[in-house]
Length: 125
Length: 221
Image 1 (cartoon, rainbow over the protein chains, first blue to last red):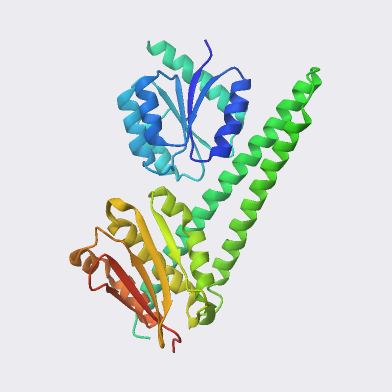
Image 2 (cartoon, chains in turn cyan, blue):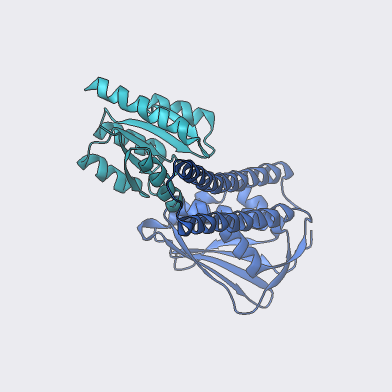
């Protein structure tokens, strides 16, 4: 089964090209520019991995992370973000994020992280 | 000058840091999009090596996407340069309309993050004032930050500039959550010191729902 991935970022141009490249690598990709919309999507669909920007309109990254984990405790969350201070990264990991990757990212590295996240989620079933 | 330079320096550095961090974040986002386009180009090259033809129209779209981001980065850096040079002279003649437009560009991400829309209303004719441009933007930022908190559910603020005979008024309006107590709490030492540097006054509008920054057209310090 391909990894079912939800990609959240307020940069639409970034989302579109990431979705294209990740889709070409065999992943099942959904996208949204809104954290609130993402929460609704997570409530109705079961994703293996959520990849989210930390700084987004509408919702603070910590709050989004908490709500996503409360809604789907088994979902693996990777933060893909620009310029987040180290202490915030550590706090995000404590709140349940699997990893933090800085933009611009290496897609091969991100793909490895997604595969590892899916394996982790499958083991938790 | 009647103010405490240490508070001014600290407040100014905090403001400079916040804007610089925001610019850095924006540029990282630009680089991320360019990086993904380069990656996609690499993907297409690998597919071409395996005999899958590349669609020239797709390459054209990618080139346009990169050019768009380069234009975006160029604007960000031009604004950053203007902002950095705003501290070159303590007092300078500035076009207030241009200063407010630069201020809006520099603070766009903060407004977006808080879901607040600001309608900038400028007079048709330019207003030139002799002021401390960096500290003016610093004070405008503190007023905007406060206004975004006092804006209530509406999340729309009118930012209106107008000239009178001897002064300039910059109004932050439609602050439905504004109260006397909130405004009183806003005016801390840092705001008071910036007001002293700029020889300015900050008041709540008589009917409420807004604050008015009254600036001297020429400051003497």
